[in-house]
Image (cartoon, rainbow, N blue to C red; front, side, top):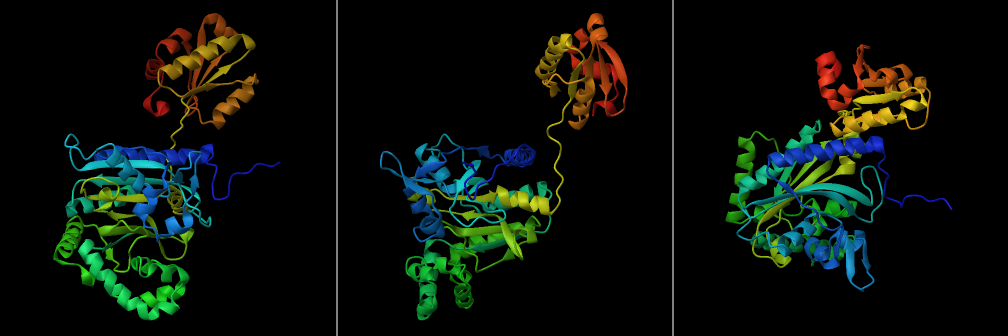
Length: 434
């Protein structure tokens, strides 16, 4: 039998994993600058955590959820997105308590699962980086989250980014718009797709998000949510726009954007990029918004929140398409070459000593000839080789060579074991050490 990975999944091999590590560590550093702390939640949750928060008419719940009954007959689901699990953890662990200064800012990284047709940058198991901030209803926090998303993508060296924003208003605004949308769509009921017919009276905003081309033609003439914002909602959105202008962050208002989940309120946004690697025209690379009311849905107190999610696979496809250069993160400082079987112990001692001092070091484990060992050192881009043969063993010395300059020096093994950093400083200049 030939074993293969499940459809819609990918093996991230070492060379590719280095790039992923760079992206993750860059995100961690940037989130720390914004004072966001990491949170880790289970990969699967009670089914109701997602069905209640995402909406029972959403594609995620009706078509894409990996849900199952466990051996205790509990209805569980692999997480299809990150926000609901973080909110559940926020409520269950009472992070809303007075001992936690607000806003509470967290970020997460990990696998998500949706059963959909695999395509470029979109898999059934995909990886997401996301942030959530709880406890403030101020427009300034909306803008901080959007600015951080733009900042993060800029740190990755991406170009051609476009920030698109909209407002879904508060509950009262949504209720007024909901009725207006039903009134507009009802006369077209027979023309709608089957999915949209089901959604029309349950959640008509879902019809605006339909992928059906005929549905899209129908909703072109639909009323705009921006015309139904009440005074408070309009004031909030106006302040968001004012702050983005003040920070000189360009944006485009898209009144047709609703996002694919039911929990959003007020500000929503998408960061888009024009890249054929992800399809024709602008496609979304990062998206999110405010979700006041979601904490209450999962049993917590009244607590506003906002966040975004970023798909790693789509990001990596985009970075490759834009030819972003990744830094070398696995530099090999020294390769220890042993000539003769009797040098094995000393080379092993040196390698372990260097690693203990914080150097990346390696040696041969295949009993190869010196020429093959030097070839390996060169292939691995080792900065230095440390060579021990019979004569060096008798003299208790080693030959240290800079691979960049070719400079070689003979050094007592004891000095290398005691402090290799001092050896480099004593015998080599900064350019050779770099």
